[in-house]
Image (tube, rainbow, N blue to C red):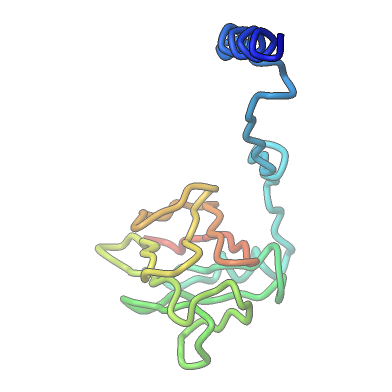
Amino acid sequence: MGTANIDAATEQRGANMDDESPAEQTMSIDSRNPEAEATSHHLSPQDQAAVDALPIGSALLIVHHGPNAGARFLLDRDTTTAGRSVDGDIFLDDVTVSREHVHFERRGGAYYAKDAGSLNGTYVNYERIVTRKLEAGDEVHIGKYRLTFYPGPA
Protein backbone atom coordinates (compact mmCIF):
# COMPACT_ATOMS: atom_id res chain seq x y z
CA MET A 1 0.00 0.00 0.00
CA GLY A 2 2.84 2.41 0.85
CA THR A 3 4.61 1.65 -2.43
CA ALA A 4 1.44 2.16 -4.47
CA ASN A 5 0.92 5.61 -2.91
CA ILE A 6 4.54 6.59 -3.60
CA ASP A 7 4.27 5.42 -7.22
CA ALA A 8 1.00 7.30 -7.68
CA ALA A 9 2.51 10.46 -6.19
CA THR A 10 5.58 10.17 -8.39
CA GLU A 11 3.42 9.61 -11.47
CA GLN A 12 1.21 12.58 -10.52
CA ARG A 13 4.25 14.83 -9.95
CA GLY A 14 5.71 13.84 -13.33
CA ALA A 15 2.41 14.57 -15.07
CA ASN A 16 2.29 18.04 -13.51
CA MET A 17 5.94 18.90 -14.18
CA ASP A 18 5.02 20.93 -17.25
CA ASP A 19 1.93 22.43 -15.62
CA GLU A 20 3.42 23.80 -12.44
CA SER A 21 1.11 25.71 -10.19
CA PRO A 22 1.91 29.41 -9.77
CA ALA A 23 3.31 28.68 -6.31
CA GLU A 24 5.84 26.27 -7.83
CA GLN A 25 7.00 28.49 -10.70
CA THR A 26 10.15 30.55 -10.58
CA MET A 27 9.69 34.16 -11.50
CA SER A 28 12.15 37.01 -12.00
CA ILE A 29 11.15 40.42 -10.79
CA ASP A 30 13.04 43.42 -12.08
CA SER A 31 12.67 46.25 -9.61
CA ARG A 32 13.68 48.99 -12.00
CA ASN A 33 11.19 50.50 -14.37
CA PRO A 34 13.03 52.83 -16.75
CA GLU A 35 9.80 54.42 -17.95
CA ALA A 36 8.68 55.20 -14.40
CA GLU A 37 12.13 56.31 -13.25
CA ALA A 38 13.02 58.26 -16.37
CA THR A 39 12.32 61.87 -15.69
CA SER A 40 13.30 64.65 -17.95
CA HIS A 41 15.78 66.57 -15.89
CA HIS A 42 14.74 70.18 -15.95
CA LEU A 43 17.80 72.28 -15.56
CA SER A 44 17.86 75.09 -13.06
CA PRO A 45 18.57 78.51 -14.59
CA GLN A 46 22.14 78.24 -13.21
CA ASP A 47 22.69 74.79 -14.74
CA GLN A 48 21.22 75.94 -18.07
CA ALA A 49 23.55 78.94 -18.04
CA ALA A 50 26.51 76.60 -17.38
CA VAL A 51 25.49 74.38 -20.32
CA ASP A 52 24.99 77.40 -22.58
CA ALA A 53 28.45 78.73 -21.65
CA LEU A 54 30.32 75.50 -22.42
CA PRO A 55 33.37 76.01 -24.61
CA ILE A 56 33.58 74.27 -27.97
CA GLY A 57 34.58 70.61 -27.60
CA SER A 58 33.64 70.34 -23.93
CA ALA A 59 30.71 68.77 -22.09
CA LEU A 60 29.11 68.81 -18.65
CA LEU A 61 27.97 66.02 -16.36
CA ILE A 62 25.40 67.05 -13.75
CA VAL A 63 24.57 64.78 -10.80
CA HIS A 64 20.78 64.45 -10.64
CA HIS A 65 20.54 61.62 -8.12
CA GLY A 66 22.76 60.38 -5.33
CA PRO A 67 25.35 61.98 -3.12
CA ASN A 68 26.35 65.47 -4.26
CA ALA A 69 23.14 65.96 -6.26
CA GLY A 70 23.53 69.18 -8.20
CA ALA A 71 27.30 68.83 -8.60
CA ARG A 72 28.66 69.67 -12.06
CA PHE A 73 31.71 68.09 -13.67
CA LEU A 74 33.33 69.65 -16.71
CA LEU A 75 34.67 67.34 -19.41
CA ASP A 76 37.28 69.37 -21.27
CA ARG A 77 40.17 66.97 -21.80
CA ASP A 78 40.73 63.98 -24.04
CA THR A 79 40.38 61.62 -21.05
CA THR A 80 38.64 62.32 -17.75
CA THR A 81 38.67 59.59 -15.08
CA ALA A 82 35.86 59.12 -12.58
CA GLY A 83 35.93 56.84 -9.56
CA ARG A 84 36.44 56.51 -5.83
CA SER A 85 40.10 57.53 -5.93
CA VAL A 86 40.85 61.04 -4.72
CA ASP A 87 43.55 61.08 -7.42
CA GLY A 88 40.94 60.81 -10.19
CA ASP A 89 39.51 63.77 -12.07
CA ILE A 90 35.99 63.15 -10.74
CA PHE A 91 35.80 61.86 -7.16
CA LEU A 92 32.68 59.80 -6.42
CA ASP A 93 32.55 58.90 -2.74
CA ASP A 94 30.60 55.63 -2.73
CA VAL A 95 31.79 52.13 -1.79
CA THR A 96 30.01 50.67 -4.85
CA VAL A 97 32.21 52.78 -7.12
CA SER A 98 35.60 51.36 -8.13
CA ARG A 99 38.72 53.47 -7.56
CA GLU A 100 39.05 53.94 -11.32
CA HIS A 101 35.53 53.25 -12.50
CA VAL A 102 34.99 54.94 -15.86
CA HIS A 103 36.85 57.03 -18.40
CA PHE A 104 35.13 59.77 -20.35
CA GLU A 105 37.00 60.04 -23.64
CA ARG A 106 36.78 62.82 -26.19
CA ARG A 107 37.23 61.50 -29.73
CA GLY A 108 36.71 63.65 -32.79
CA GLY A 109 34.26 66.02 -31.13
CA ALA A 110 32.20 63.28 -29.45
CA TYR A 111 32.40 61.91 -25.92
CA TYR A 112 32.41 58.24 -24.98
CA ALA A 113 31.94 56.54 -21.63
CA LYS A 114 34.33 53.59 -21.27
CA ASP A 115 34.08 51.31 -18.26
CA ALA A 116 37.53 50.82 -16.70
CA GLY A 117 36.92 47.23 -15.58
CA SER A 118 34.77 48.25 -12.62
CA LEU A 119 33.26 45.58 -10.40
CA ASN A 120 29.70 46.92 -10.46
CA GLY A 121 29.67 48.23 -14.01
CA THR A 122 28.85 51.48 -15.71
CA TYR A 123 25.39 52.01 -17.14
CA VAL A 124 24.10 54.43 -19.74
CA ASN A 125 20.32 54.73 -19.87
CA TYR A 126 19.97 51.52 -17.81
CA GLU A 127 22.16 49.43 -20.12
CA ARG A 128 25.50 48.10 -18.90
CA ILE A 129 28.22 49.31 -21.21
CA VAL A 130 31.83 48.62 -22.06
CA THR A 131 32.15 51.67 -24.32
CA ARG A 132 29.35 53.87 -25.55
CA LYS A 133 29.08 57.17 -27.38
CA LEU A 134 27.24 59.69 -25.23
CA GLU A 135 24.36 61.74 -26.60
CA ALA A 136 22.72 64.84 -25.11
CA GLY A 137 20.54 63.85 -22.16
CA ASP A 138 22.07 60.40 -21.64
CA GLU A 139 22.00 59.29 -18.02
CA VAL A 140 25.22 57.70 -16.77
CA HIS A 141 24.90 55.45 -13.69
CA ILE A 142 27.99 54.97 -11.56
CA GLY A 143 27.20 53.33 -8.23
CA LYS A 144 24.61 55.48 -6.45
CA TYR A 145 25.27 58.40 -8.80
CA ARG A 146 23.13 59.31 -11.80
CA LEU A 147 24.72 61.95 -13.96
CA THR A 148 23.19 63.52 -17.04
CA PHE A 149 25.41 64.33 -20.01
CA TYR A 150 25.20 67.74 -21.70
CA PRO A 151 27.52 68.35 -24.66
CA GLY A 152 28.81 71.78 -25.53
CA PRO A 153 28.89 73.21 -29.02
CA ALA A 154 30.72 71.09 -31.57
